Length: 381
Image (cartoon, rainbow, N blue to C red; front, side, top):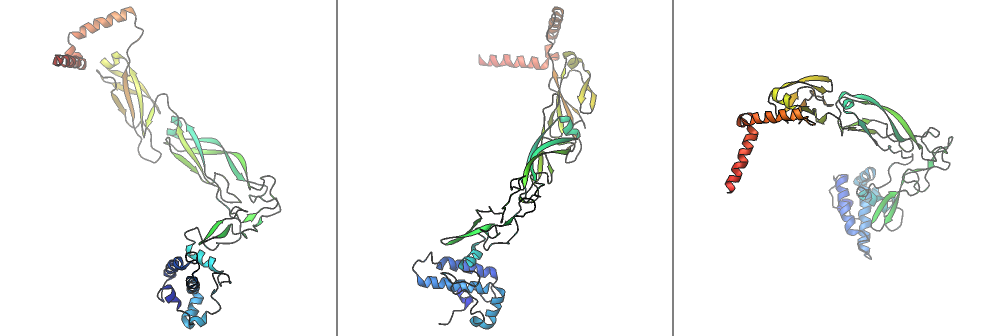
């Protein structure tokens, strides 16, 4: 019986792209696969035919021969017995099927062979507590970080000095093995070498075959001016060493600014509370207030109320990402005198009596509040 045209078998045009043929084959393979059609010889034969067609038409040389000479140009090259047993030209059904469905399960036919798979080392994080002054002005600090470094004895290979790792006999150095599970061909990490592709017969005594060993190293970290809690500084290549000579990860220094006795930071602004006496609040005056650059004078106007904010421009923080410095905001807090002696108490009582005579003018808030309370109770009657 004459063989059916391969393009017709797959249902594609003669100028079909490999992607179009792959899509067509996937659809037909799902339909005619023997696992889906048990004891159906016709479906099994159909599956063999479309597998053969796909194998020929996805190989550039075989496709060119087929296009020129037809089936005569490829007889003996195709895997006519590709499923069920005989040796298919490209490795049998599993290779063809793995090529089509490999993108779903992480890859089909194997990847590069040979060579130990070196993996990048893990990134590390170090929390660095800073005083507010150091965070605002910048500084350089030394930190000690526990990490994994390349073993100097075996140069990171894990093998005893003078020896080398050998290819894993289970996976042949690929690092993965393929298992046929019913309808699917599944690729898994090699259980023997755990994906490394190499095995060590004589491990290094210093690192016990790991290629890395623990070490606590000291690093100098430059802190730029303006950092704040939550900022982090990346030190490239200062993380854990990679396995089997792989590149090291990075170290991230996470900044945490300590609470300050005087200032609180919000973005690029600083806040502080300035206690003032009753006399200063009533009569006004000049007070010395602290900044991160030294002391400055703050002018308190007469009749200032507690909680009033005064802004000192440019006395805040210059952000690490650029821009002008913020401000220092001083909140004045009226401090009530304590531990008064008898004479002081008498003077305050006399002063209070004098205020009562003109309460509506000299204590307008207090006067208005009491009037409001009186009106509230009058309305309840």
